[in-house]
Image 1 (tube, each protein chain N blue to C red):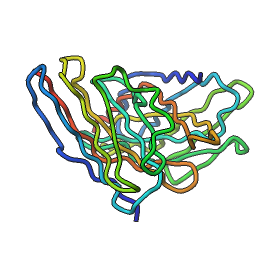
Image 2 (image 1 turned 30 degrees about the vertical axis):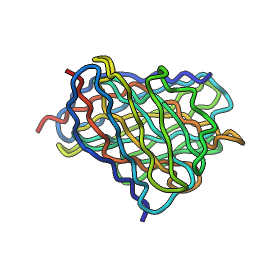
Image 3 (image 1 turned 180 degrees about the vertical axis):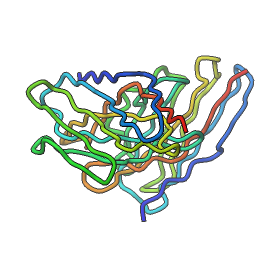
Length: 112
Length: 115
């Protein structure tokens, strides 16, 4: 069935370093979404991919954030010059049926 | 844009009692309302959903109701069990032609079922 794999599951990085987060929609979904979840808060939309193009990047919080996708496969979310406020769980999601999503388990990013 | 509010933020119930979580939304164009359960260290999992042409849907101990006029929808869990303890998120979805379904999430409810 549909599945989304994310890596790493946990990442601790020093402030100012760059990080790459990976999402692999196992069954090859056309659409792919990235969300951010800060501690104790809801899900914040970051970016949407249709194939390897990103029609909606409106949620990326700053130009330090970027994402790319190879075809209908792996996507990477890159955060440059990380800041402490970037600490959060980053979730990737792929369509489930006509309306819903399947989420990956997320990458917990801690910037120290 | 759409704004989804969710209450309460935390909820504790005794095992066997019912739990109710409520959400409101602002955009009448929203037409799909899923509920997600997120256990510690895991991504959100879809547990039940409802479309705007339906007022109520039930799946075993879980039910969702939708009031389109008032723009609110609720999750009802009956006969709660300790394994129901998790964070629950509601969402409202608008389907856009160019960008597919855009989901707007509530801020979550941390449910604790006390044995």
